Image (cartoon, rainbow, N blue to C red):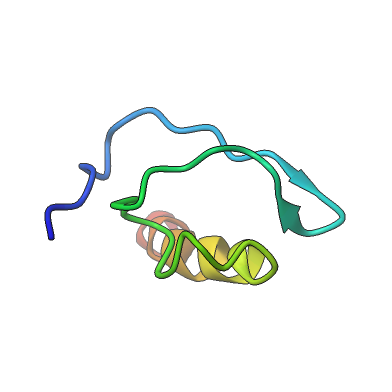
Length: 55
């Protein structure tokens, strides 16, 4: 499955750690876009490399 490029603009909206915004099924940073309850942790893990590359 093709994934959305990492540099594509995205917006994630959460309420009490629950993903409420629409996302593409091919989102690069969310391992399972259908798992809205676990999306906060999945997004943090997906973005972790950005923080590490700037340290």
